[in-house]
Length: 401
Image 1 (cartoon, rainbow, N blue to C red):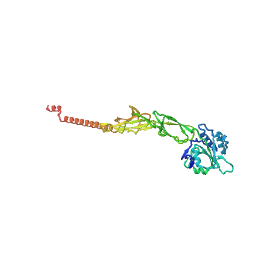
Image 2: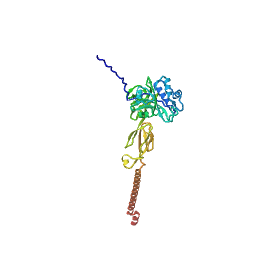
Image 3: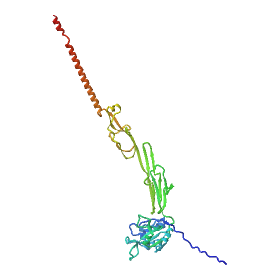
């Protein structure tokens, strides 16, 4: 007879993932020594979500906290009152803690701390105090913890060796939330005369309010982030370059948050300067300062007058046929499109040409006068000589008699 063999199969636990983080909201102990109270507040915010946890002061009174700290057992009692199971451990078992964390359990850990500030009261003969932290996850050889004394750095990374060195005991909170703790992010888009698109983590959405799990990072982008309207004289640009992207960057606190995407508006006007030989066109922002090149006070006149040395004199800056200013340099604050023309007019009294002409006329007149005088004298002299050559009639008659 062949007896059948009994095959025993050993149950194999599922492999612990390489990393895991539980979305536990962060609360600070502030300036108080109530680190264990703040850790209890975090645990209740996590396990009982969406129920609002007690305030730090309410929980401190319940846990009989003093100005020196809190007794560690009070943490377990606070959980017990709410029918939340805790498991007390003194040994440092990193793999066991990883397994519990991967199951969604938070771990309150008491670690050795300097004498000040007082944290957890453990007895008069212990040469150190204890500080309560909350283990919320892990990565390879590192644990991720909420330290209630360090509000600037939630989800702090603590190496396994460092945690082992400071280890004293822990409470594994054997409960997890029915709904993952989340925070609300509301998006508002302001001052956009054109349609915009919102994308969340690369996905286009028509929604403007989002519910994100605590501790997760998301990227919200608005597009287009630049838009321009333009005609021949005016252009208006809308830009959201500086903050067109919002990254939540691991938000660890509960609450409702909002982000308003504001587009800055820039208005520009065209300024045309019609210099005779070097005209130019440029755009200036509304409210900016415009300063023209200084105009020449005089210019040569056109044509033969210019060749003769006559000048044109600057009469001012004109726009639409109206005098704007008589200054050589036009300075203003731009508030509208401008078409500026400098104007010069012939001034016969400007420059040496007129004096040359006057001198020429004077010289011409002097020459004419001198010439006329000389001619007159010559004529008078000639007449005088002709009279001397003729005999007198009276004398002739006298001689004949």
